[in-house]
Length: 199
Image (cartoon, rainbow, N blue to C red; front, side, top):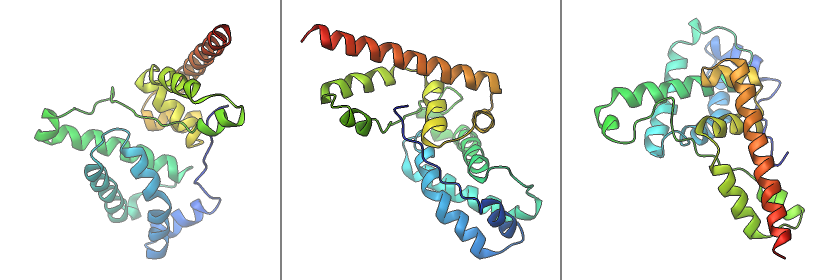
């Protein structure tokens, strides 16, 4: 696959989560240090106002700290935090009047994905022009396909976790990813074929 997988979750996450729920500040700081950059990176894909997203991530961590005793056990801390942030951003953006006048965030948000395909292309000695053509093809995917692809292949999340984050069913996630990969493969093959025909 052409997209690098990144797994930020560690085997100790469930231990840290339990310690956090007991009120251990070191565990909370560990969660904050590990997941703040990931959540910020994920959040700015919904809305490009980095300060708003920073505030949303901050509010999320304050909220989970204040509610820590009432939080349940989670299978994946990363998935839980990403889902919570996504919901918070959508909820807060619709509450603020000035956000309604700007680009409104809804379930049909503009999801930006920067795939790490440079390494893939360089390793196969494909020219920069082909990279631009492929990026153009990736941009033609639907917003939800781009989000599902990002969560699956750059965040290494399972289909179940993606379904929870995106608030859709498992089958829809499978279909989104399958159709996105099929489109990329078809268009990429056509691009390669056309580039050979013109040389």
